[in-house]
Amino acid sequence: MTEMKAIEAKGLTKRYGDFLAVDHISFEVEQGELFGFLGPNGAGKTTTIRMLTGVSTPTQGEASIMGHNIVKESVKAKSLMGIVPDISNVYSELSAWENLTFTGKLYGVPKAKREEKAEDLLKRFGLHDRRADKVEEFSRGMKRRVCIAMALVNDSRLLFLDEPTAGLDVKSVRVIRKLVRDLNEEGLTVFLTTHNIEEASRMCDRIAIINRGKIAAVDTPERLKSAMKTSQAVEVAFTEVKARLQKRLDALPSVREVQKRGDKIRLLTEEPSKTLKEVWHFIEENDLDPITLNTIGPSLEDVFLQLTGVEMEAEIIHKRGGRRGAR
Amino acid sequence: MLLDELRRSWAITIKDMKIYYLRPPALMFGVLFPVALFFTFSIGRSMPPERLLPVLAAQTVFWSASSIGPTAIPLERRTRTFERFLSAPISLISVLWGKMMAGFLFGLGITTLATGIGVVWASQPVLNPLAFAIGIMLSAMVYSAMGILFASIPTGSPGEVIIPLNFVRIPLMFVSGMFIPLDQMPKIGVYAAFLSPLSHTLDLIRLGIGRPSYFGSLSNIGVLIVWLLAFLFVGQIFHKIIMKRE
Image 1 (cartoon, rainbow over the protein chains, first blue to last red):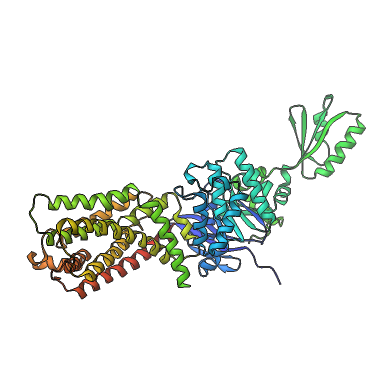
Image 2 (cartoon, chains in turn cyan, brown):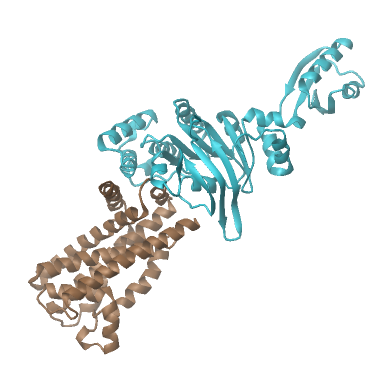
């Protein structure tokens, strides 16, 4: 028996008048996964999260949370999730404690349990000392932590995080990333939208790249990168650069293009391991002294730019079988 | 299940009471405005207490109860805390009920205070407390629901809800027997007055201080209940439409 999906979106569409914000997207998120939803501003990330959380009604298509349809069984679906929107929508006039206990009441958590949970979360999120203070006195990072804690009061099994670290200082970003990773390691499924490529690459098990309301690719960060064969390279630097060296390296069978980068020579290739062997053989044959010899894979940024900048690239990944989960 | 929804709804009421009762739009239109209107209406005119007290009570409950929804909901849209209700496992009607109760309790509190002072100051006894209490309580529900209906306007500014609401509130005062007693109105005016919930509030409060009800107490209660259900029903539909658009 297959495990129930944490999120299942089928043909999810949102139209505002003539503007198609989200265009028939389909994807699945496994339980326990940290799933990234990466896209440029205005790509449809927040609209998607609003439909998945029941804040906005899809124009077309459907989504289910742990097997419960978000429109038809909204109460059941909503009771299983916690939501952290792109701004910290906390009640500034209330204390951190009141914010958490009010959320507990809203989710029908019994008094003793919600107070115990609020106490635990405030301690875990480093806010216990300030629990009686009004949230309006808190820093942006602290408000973000209150917001995440509010999303966990109901023992949610799925956490939606919309741009959780946007606009925060470096320290707060680190704290929040660690919290999210720890929560995921404890079994919580996390759906994270971000336009921060580095964040998605470092944190997520799988990533969906969304652009202009359409999903361009869904896969693990590493597989997305390896699908971008044209961006792979071998980089070499020598103690002494001999005449015609660049031209001779260009003649290596697996090398597609040679680029001079400062004191280094970058050899673009689609077969980095083969190129590495050829370069090593070339070094020995010509009695050269290498300082560095590295393979350079494409960054997720390369993948992102290719996918969001040139739509055809999405199809290339699709043909290579790189789209797991996307239909 | 219903009890559970009511508990969640009550949590919203308590939260709104803590946050919005002392907000400037609530104080301005819920307290200051009815008091100012009352003094504008009464100062310099030698009117008997049995004419003044129902006007004081009716317009206080009318303005105060209808001011919390238009203050709370736009502010919650601005801070996006209203989204919390939409993504929480609670029905929209329970959310709106919770908000309506906050307006009801605000209206009830302010009106009780204003009317209490009025009763003592004018030495006007309340001879039919039941009619008096029903008049104020039922009206507070109706006007609070009216405020919730107008708060479906998708804006983050209370002013953008209060201004269109005032376009309804102010004319209603002129057709409800506040300034011209119902028995002195032309026939067309009486028809209009019958449709206005404020006439029935005034009528029930008049009954409370021992004066006869113009339309009859059953008509008063019936019309107020119809308006309450209509405001709640239409309000819920409007909020749902806005939700679909968002």
